[in-house]
Image 1: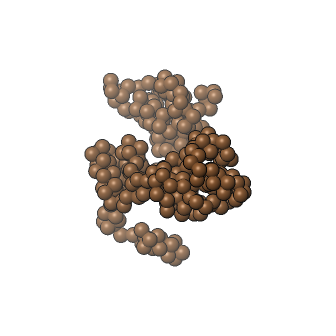
Image 2: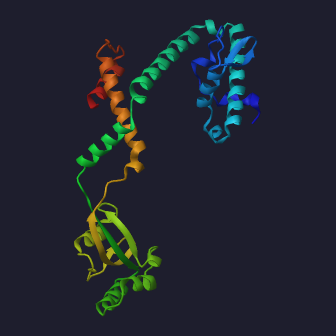
Image 3: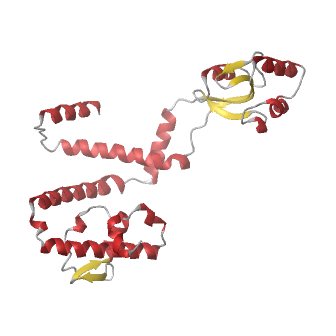
Length: 283
């Protein structure tokens, strides 16, 4: 993609419209380029990198930075042209800037109040709270042999009655995808299998096989239960990101509730008022 086209990958933001003049350059935030005397600071490239299309996330750092620079140059170039055409003086633009400012302030307080304060200890504590509040669930490890007819299934049960090995019979006769693993389905909890299969599997004792075939939409099954146990909760490392999102959603909810209590909200449109109040009641 040509560098002059990279600006199209940026989302609309206030930086696209505000001239950045008169900045005091310093070592921490140097001027990296200018457009008709308007400075482009290193910090602006960092902001622009965050708005680049996700495809640019895979680029090396130096290429991604060049892409961000090209985007900011194009933004400021067109911004100067828009100013020359007095587009910044239109009512639509002024309304947009009010909204962009409010959204930027919303994001700033969200980051400072909700995102930044969340620690690893907060996430771990929330995880442990969820684990403690979640009832333990039983799971079973079963094998099965899947065949097309009831007669085939009954014949297999007869062979099992003579002492034949279930796993070997599964490898030899099962038409299911688990045949190569001796019919092993691994551990599963209730709700993971079709009801007819599940009812029989959970009723068996470890080491038992069902004395009658089980019919499901897939065919006829001969089922053996290998083991049963209490399912372990997901490891913290596996769900830490999801738990972080839960913590942030809750803190955001608390922040919004507190902030709404400090302002007076009046919805004037009758239809919107009804819908808004209904949503608030649900929440």
